[in-house]
Length: 627
Image 1: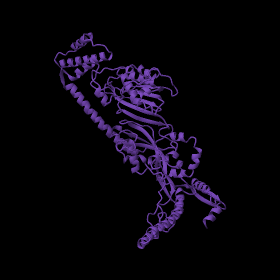
Image 2: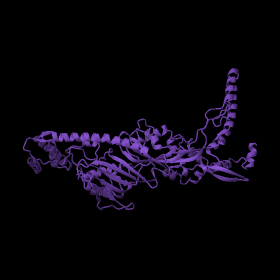
Image 3: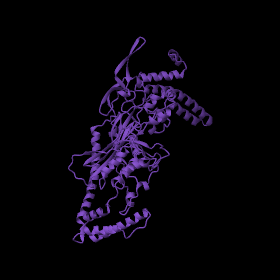
């Protein structure tokens, strides 16, 4: 039967649009697979392409080397040998839109987001994509089954979504816009991230979403067959597996029908990879029944990733899922030692931040990309080993909150100590650039009693204080993106993977705990076993007091008064504390210096290395609103 007879029998004629729509309907119904369609198109296109290529090559050789007969004969022989070969088509894989949750220690990384094109980039994303490419879980646009399935009706989508195309791409990450940059595996995977942490910041609940290769072939079919009536004939057909029927974890297996593996051995008669030894096309062979489990993505990636990055779990998500825009809220934690901080005052300051406020005075300004500085903080905590201060507000409440934080006492016998490790937890919908670190810097000033908790309300009053005061942000080393919450995200985890992750985290804790204990032992030893002269302590206190007095006089623009009565008070206090012997232990000396000058032999809480270097015992605090 000729091609014209076939087209006439099915009433297509020469209408290409009708043929495309008919092919798309067959693929969508499951009567033929995408691989079958690609094989048929490749065969039709290959024969036509080879004939044109042979004729063109022969003419070119004849024109160029008319007098060189031997060379023409050799080239013509090669053309004849290559005439039967077909252009190799890329294999198409099933891909699934999945969400990955992972933890990482950001100490050795330059940040989470990758700086594409920079050789010195050392980001978490760079390590993640390197592992994805090495495990071959990322596929090119030509191999992405989702792109191939959507190619047939792409024109219809463009026409229907023309009005809302821009908005959809910004919020949902549609295929239409992503496909424009087909050279990038990242764009083809529809990659999205939940949070973008800076250099040195850590995460325990970071979430990303992207399309990854599935263990299920694109042509896999259900075991249950369906009956269709075609005229007088009744056919028994097996439907293609759909996304909703696939397992949602790496533990449950699914029995399905899959085509046999391709025979890579070519027949001696010039058969290609699509034929078996008898020359029968594979699509005509019977399918094999097989139980398949989905790839264990966390285990595969953790085998490649550095120990500082661990994948915790995964789950399939809908095509419209975005790790950034689908996130309901994000939780950050900032860890710090208690030292001399007033945790109750810090909790009161945090209480004033609850609700929707303009945080332009508590972030790093980026006016080129951000014009709205209002953010909603929903809940917060200041946690110590002895008690928890809880602050909260309703989501729709926009007024400043002035109520007192709730206090929850913890059942522990541990006494309060300057070495207690505490943390502040803040939950919000979204955050500005460096917002958490700026908030903690303000709270630490409140905790050290350098500022009143009311300073928070002053900074949130943009009409009264439209300009951000100058202050240093808190260090990034103690900040953790603790959790990213989604409305309908049920991550699947395996015991084997979590066991291996726990081993890595236990090892990391052991290294840091041993280092902390070594430092604590050195502190205890030097305080108890070292002695100093009391006269040297007196000189140290007087020197710091005079330097601080000069700086304070310079700040308020008045001459220093050398005859101030405070000098006599300092001398009297030192004489009162004089020991019976000229030597005292270093631990007692530290206590005397701390009580008289209100200074401590450690940097301010949350200070960076550079900030701590500039801090001295005679440093004078300048009120924030005067900066």
